[in-house]
Length: 281
Picture (cartoon, rainbow, N blue to C red):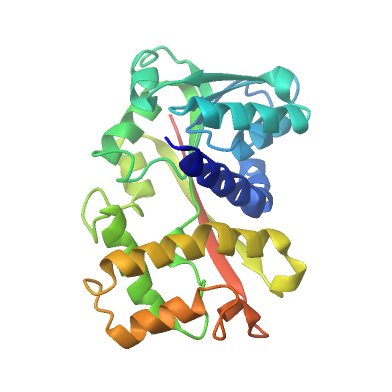
């Protein structure tokens, strides 16, 4: 990875972590972590879930954060230290499926949290990944799958038709299927197929209005969302059904400092309907 790529990744992780922090706190609060001593944060990323889990579970709990990127884990450990929970946290670098397979059938974890991890961009067979997550739970253990629900968000209110095409371009850019058994919205289906019971679904919206009073939202849009959508428009916009005028409109709306920049329009808002699905072994 180049220095530029590393810098972009850190910007993404920090912006994403700050933006979703209040939602993650609410989601973790729904898990009932009292007495849950062994917790896995599967694909810890910037460590937002790692710190929230440790804080909610209490000082006797131990949280293992797993990620394939050693640099990402260093960022997560630094965040845990800044949040005062470093003593409860350990990390392990490696492929999640390998780490799970080494613990399968051993009742290794009381709770597993996987935030924006289980989707076809990471796993060819997400249902099999969920089954393996379930197989590392202790009896009565809880699996929590969280998704920011990116592709159902309102980033461009007032431009809904254009936004639908932007989402399609992004899905094409990431190679995400439009439907079928590996579609990223099938969390409850995968849990039920894995034999988990008491499957529950919660919608946890992250909203921002007005944008000027929510710097984390602006940083998230400008540092994460706009670059991703613009890259998708430039590479797959025509394939997503966008004509030249729509591509030019998207460029104008999403380019900071330009005359048509969407965040300069008074009244702009953001709705991110995150989803949490839980199931018990």
